[in-house]
Image (cartoon, rainbow, N blue to C red; front, side, top):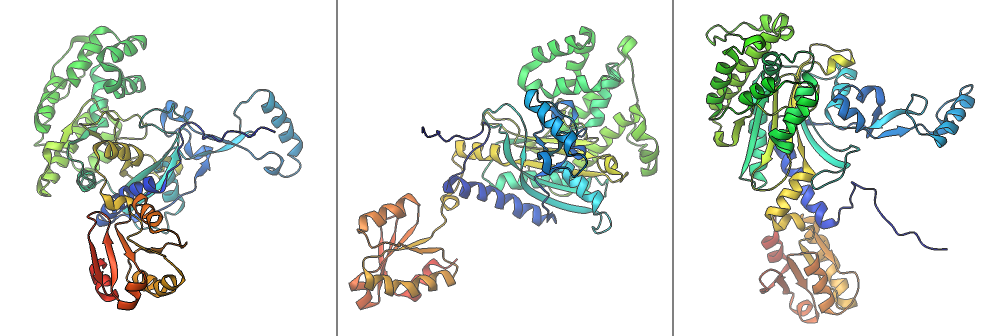
Length: 494
């Protein structure tokens, strides 16, 4: 009988101890910042009911869900077993998707399950509710560099407030997390769905928003030529496509781009003219936005400009130091259909990689589950992409790969017995320590320490036992010191 060669499903990976150590370094850095900004931890199940997930991510997102087959005869009780067996017989011949076959799916992201949690627990949580979540998600995507079928997301969301202070704090968190990870050359892109709504109106594309949004979202991947071809196939005229690129090519600082866009929006283009005038001195009150602006296309455009300027103002008042990393990018679309306000994306400039973080404002997500008028905004870090970027740039500190700080050597029975209480003393002082379990040659034990990147080796032989002075070897420098146990504890204390 031949043995089957072991393999992994495409788009999934094993993680060695060294890799897990580096990933935990990323997780811990992100978690520390989230908690610093007042976010609390949350976990939800790996699988959700299909009805919870479908219709929340757009047509493309629905196609990329990993659906879970029902569990045969164990799934239903009598008298439905016979009918279910018939369905199973059919699926063996030709797979298809019906409620009798699949009712659940692996979660596609963490935001929709979070919205479901908020609705189900609305009487137990306090609003505004700030949560972070670090868990894996699954997408039936084509595997490639930086894109996997199973990967972790690190999300932070706040629901129950429309305050744009939340958007400003998202920019602060993005900048702090990535700076703390050692990244310096990155861009935090921001746009607003209202700006995109302005594009739809200006181009006479009302009713075909999805086609335009999907095409714009691919601009950095397929270029202007590819977007042009895709829009032509969707029925857009060359005049409209030309006007679109005029809107997308604005340049300059954050404020300069907003001014240019406002001017372009106010310039007529013949039969496609859908202009509006924006006066920042006459900003409507909150009640107006709630009752009118959200249902009026022209006012959505105006609100977008006001929102973006307000986020910019908040950042100035919060003494944000890295405005050079913040870019207003009108080409940013974010493919997920539930976004309604400001949207974010982060790109590392000195590595060829897709976005490593993204998110935005959503006003209607909880409403899909029966809890309307609960606005939320959040971001998600793509840990796997961040890992690949940091690996390429060699940004991981040595400590991220180290679990054990001290290895105690084991020469013979006498040294082993002598070492046992010292082992416990070091651990009691929160110094990660292990005693080599076998009495083998010193060279093998030193190789073990070197391969595990253990920074210190404590050598205990007959001479050391007699004197009470143990040899502590620094594996990085090769230096050795003869020290008593208390001195070792003081030297290695953390």
